[in-house]
Amino acid sequence: MQQSSEIFFRILGISTLRYFILAGIPFIVYYHLITKKKQAAKIQYRHASRVDFTREILHSMQTTIVFTAILYLVVYTPLKKFTLFYDGITDYPLWWLLAGPVLALLIHDTYFYWMHRLLHHRRLFRFAHLLHHKSTNPSPWTSYSFHFIEACTEGAVFLLIVVFVPMHLVSVTIFVITAFVINVYGHLGYEIAPLWLRKTFVFEIVNTSVYHNMHHSKFKGNYGLYFRLWDRLMRTEHPDYVKEYDAIQQRRLNNDPANE
Image 1 (tube, rainbow, N blue to C red):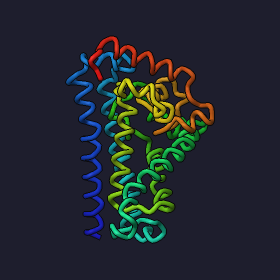
Image 2: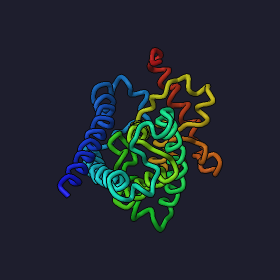
Image 3: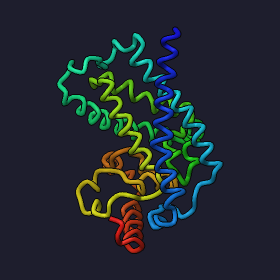
C-alpha cells in the first residue's frame, strides 16, 4: 500500500511539474516578457484577470489529480491486463514507440470532438463544461481548467487508447507531452503559427490558436482539438474562422515584418 501511494504521488508530482513548466513558460514569455512586442499577435486585445488565472490553476490541479489516477489505474493495477500497455521496450518494433502516439492523437481528436459536442448540449453544459468556458479569453493556464466531471470524461480517452493501441510508457510520455503542448498553444491567446502555414495544405487540416480561441469567445463551433477535419465534415467550423485568422496574421505582418 505504501509503495502504491509513493508511485501515485511520484506520478502526480511529475504531472504537476509538467503543467507548470509547459504552461508556465509560455505564460511568462507572452504575458510578461514580450507582451508589447507581440501585441499584434494577441487574438483578443483584452487580457484575462488574475482571478481567472487563479481559478484556472486550481481547477487544473484537480484535473491533474484525475489524470494521474487514470494513468495509475491503467499501469499499476490489475486493470492493466485488459489493455495493450506493455513494459518491454522490445515487445513491439521500436518504430511503434512513435506510431503509438500518432494513433493515440488521431483517436483522441475523434473522441474529443464528439465528447466536446456532447458537453455543449444544453442539459450538460451548465453542469460539466461551463467552468472551462468561464475562460472566455483563455491563457496557457486554461489548458487543464475543467470541472471534475469533464476531467473524468477527458481522461477516459486514455483507457480507450490503451485498449486498442499498444502503448509503452515512452509512447504514453510522448503522447501526453505532445497533446499538452498543442493544448497550451490552443489556449495561448496569441497566434504564433508561422506566416507561411497559410499557403500550405497543413493549414486545411490542423487547428490553430485562433481556431480554439474563437470557440472560447463564441461558445459555438470549432469543437475539434488537433484537427479541423471533424468540424469541416460536420459543418461546425465557425464561418468567420479563416477571415479572423487572416486578419490577425496580416496584423502580425504589418506590425512585425521580421516576425518570421
